[in-house]
Length: 249
Image 1 (cartoon, rainbow, N blue to C red):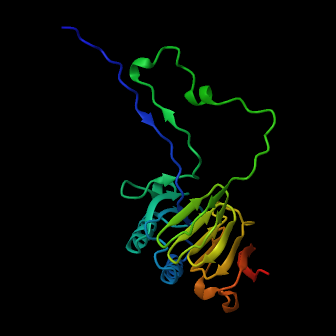
Image 2: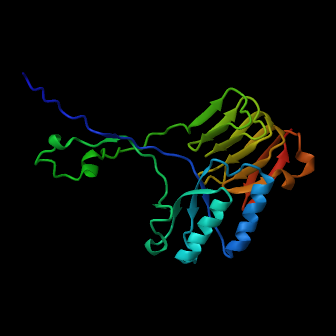
């Protein structure tokens, strides 16, 4: 009988980047929660099935107050997947994990134990780092074109750049873009432009009937919008911390 020895396959670990909402609480927390409830009431389902990162950088609260805040959010069906800006003393095994700014992550493969040799003494990060180019090539800004209507319950996430919808955005649907949003139809759902910190992003649509619009985290709900803009072709932009809108044409 012949024994066949097989080389074990290494485990492949894949990097993945996901888009989450970052909530930045303010003191007093009770007042901030009231404003959060107001947003949720005026935009039904806004936090439904949406991962959230809680950014408490610079917020003067202790561990118990942070735990109570997470519990308050959980009771509102806001799922906190991680906490950013927290001190080690504020966290614990019963709390969401600490997180930092999300970055694109490449796939990497952990080598099998038998593949390691004495020569592998170089830091793997340094060994894999490519040489810096002498000149940064000029590349076009990425964009996404969706050649259909975005229907109720559907979501389009594109944090890399602009999104163009060749159709409408239905009530209960949402479009989230790192750049600007262009809708060549009715905008009835939610549109969030500049989601990665681009205050210069804009929202354009042929028929403005949105439930919620936001640019760089600043938002307006349907109740806050000027009545004369409803049903008209319009554009939305940000001035300072104020959402502005105007009729096109």
